[in-house]
Image (cartoon, rainbow over all chains, first blue to last red):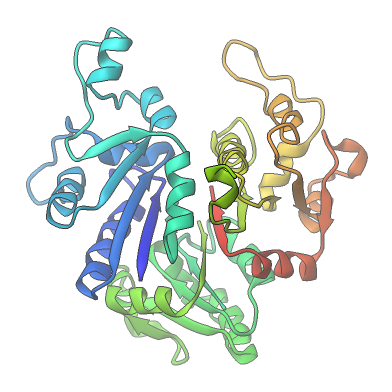
Length: 130
Length: 99
Length: 126
C-alpha cells in the first residue's frame, strides 16, 4: 500500500511529529511504500538544518533526512508555512536577501498542490496534527 | 470503516467529545499520545459505551507505559505497537485525526 | 481533454476545529480546502466545535497584524469551495444563529455529521 503523511507540528515540544516518524519507519518495515511526507504549519520546523539537538534527544530533522536518503521518500515543506517561519532554501534566501538558507538537505519547499497530489496518489493519508 | 486517532487528552479540550459524536459502529478508535488518557477516569465509561456498540478501542502501548497508565487500562482496550498502528491504518480506508 | 480533466478525483473533507485569530489553524484549513478545489478535487469544508466561530459575521481584525478570515471566506465560492457545513450543536452552544454568520452554510446534526465523514474518501483536520 502507498502511504503519505501530513505533519503539522514542530518536533520540539510536541510528540506528534515523532509519532509520524515512528509510523513512517514501521510502515516501510512492513513492506509498504511511503510516497510523501508533507510538512504544514509548524510542521515545517521538522525541515530545518539549524537545529541543535542535545545529546540523548532525538534529532528529528536529521532522522527525516536519513529516512529520505535510505528510502527515497519525498519530504515537502509547505512554502508559505516555511517562509513565514524562517525555513528557506537557497533560492528564497537570495530572493528575500537573507544571509543564509535554513532548509535541510533532503527536503524541498513547495505548495499545497503537493499535499493534494499526495492525497490522490496514496492509498492512505495519515494526519499527524496536534 | 474509519480509523479515528485521538492524540489529545480528553480533559484538555473537546476533541474526544466531537470524535464520539461522529464515530460509527464499524469504526475503530486508536488512542495515541495524550489521547491514551481517555482510557482512565471518566473516559473509560465513554469508551465502554462505544465498545458496546461495536467500536474497537485500541491504545498505543508505549504511550500508555510512558504515562504510567498501562496497568490501569480497562480489559476491553486492546494495545498495539507501531506495527499494529500500521495494520489498523491498512485495514481502514479512511483515517480521521482528533487533536 | 486537458490533463486536469483526466486527473483522478478523491473526495476530501477538510475539518476546521479551531477558533480564528488566536491561532492560524482556521485560516490554514480554508487554504487547504482552496488548494483541493484548485486541483479540481471534490472538497467539503466542515466547521466543528470551536471552528464554527470562524463563521461569525462582523470580524474586524486590526489591519496591520491580522488579515480578515471573513473576507477570505467570502471568496470560497470563487475558488470552487461550495460545500460548507457547520456543526449545528456547536453553533447553538456558542450562541450563533444563522443570522450571525458571515456566509450561508449547511447546518449538520449528528446524523449528517456521521454521513459527511463516511461520504468522503479522505478526511484532513487542520
